Length: 216
Image 1 (cartoon, rainbow, N blue to C red):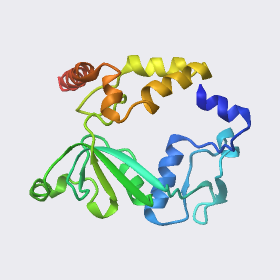
Image 2 (cartoon, rainbow, N blue to C red; image 1 turned 180 degrees about the vertical axis):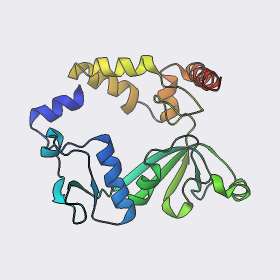
Image 3 (cartoon, one colour; image 1 turned 45 degrees about the vertical axis):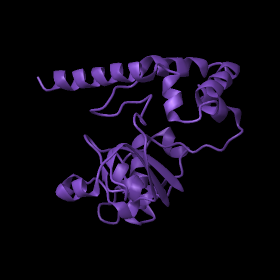
């Protein structure tokens, strides 16, 4: 609701992209090319409000949408494990993490836990992306909260519903941010204000039960 208010207010300039378009743009950035051709967006209103361009394929004659490369100034990527050098391990299905790390000008990794470089060397095939893409590493247990961290903990649905509800009222949302963001000295304090370790253990149990049921 808050983002919608700002976009509809006319105070900010907006370009529209689908989730896939953003992934494609990051892929172009990671590849070091100025754009990447796709078939999505064609024939949609989203295309009209995006910065995409259309071209005719020189091989097939079909129309293609050109998605411009995206080069974020800074990416903060939360992962399962990393060593102090930034050799990263992500468990489960990857989205655009690899491309994001390669396309961004600076990369900060936050991890559930630090592991030794010796462990990285013992199992090098488990490394998702390497140290030379990373500028800083921070150990932040439960750093994905209030969202889901696959195989670690489930999302805090009650807290997320509260977040969406207070966004409907600008005054209430400002008070919510003051309590949960600005007045918190760190992520640990934020968690403590929303159920603490008792809540995190509940979310961890839910996530483990979901994966246990999924294996049956």
